[in-house]
Image (cartoon, rainbow, N blue to C red):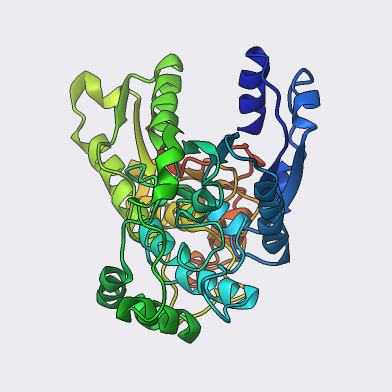
Length: 406
């Protein structure tokens, strides 16, 4: 994103006065066009922590603060936002007294295992992170802010993407707390987080900046890419590859990952069984886009041995369904992956499975059912050579699942 912005400015003979790029450590060495490198030299590159904020995220938040301090009245500031920023540049918000970086990490870990979707997670996280919930726009109120967003949330809600650093928070704590209670997420939050949210709901602590605030009058916000772009690009590639029938699901990918894996595998098997006559041998491709969740038993951070991610869990559950259906699934394969090249705390984007994957895992000496139940899909899929390892892609527009019937 920074390279693209720099190139656009260079084409218009506009110079970058300075700035900061916050990215995952693995992406800080991505190659950039040689013609743009001198322009980007004006920008500082900082690696943050993801998905749990630690000392690097704290340093990244401070680096943003140093850049903000250099902004003068009337300056034009380009803010490039993509998924992951909620963690990468996370430090405790100044208006949450006594909340430490450790408290922030504990909160993020609890939310990750709660089964909450990204919108609910960010509705909570933005209340505790230094630059989230419109606070960056408030700090840049003296400037003209142009916020360009690559969306990683269903519906492209700009207040939720990266926890809305330049967007006022439309949700009040009085509405948020009951929603958390109804969903069961409230009981899984650390005490310090619950106490602050309750205080805000009572009116004893300040609310987050709201959309009608004066600071947002100088902010222009636009979504420039989303999951829909990835899904449509995949559909175009499938057609160009000669697939006979290409279908893009109208329903976003959501819900518990393992349940979604069973559902998608069942849909593919049903499509295969419904085909009759000449249609029976036609190749078919079904594409889903969105983001599932994984719910762990008990509060707190995931167990150390729970190595996997939502896409790997979806793929492993789908592999079991394909195995259960026997020889009829021999023509079906499923890819599930994160578009950023990383699924959960692993080096895999996701996995590719078919009707033989489950038994291949068993033949390798692992118990795939136990791995699925304990959220250790990475080890199971790795034993079958089913992991998809792309490396970092430099973008993040949620997840994509591709089902093939060949």
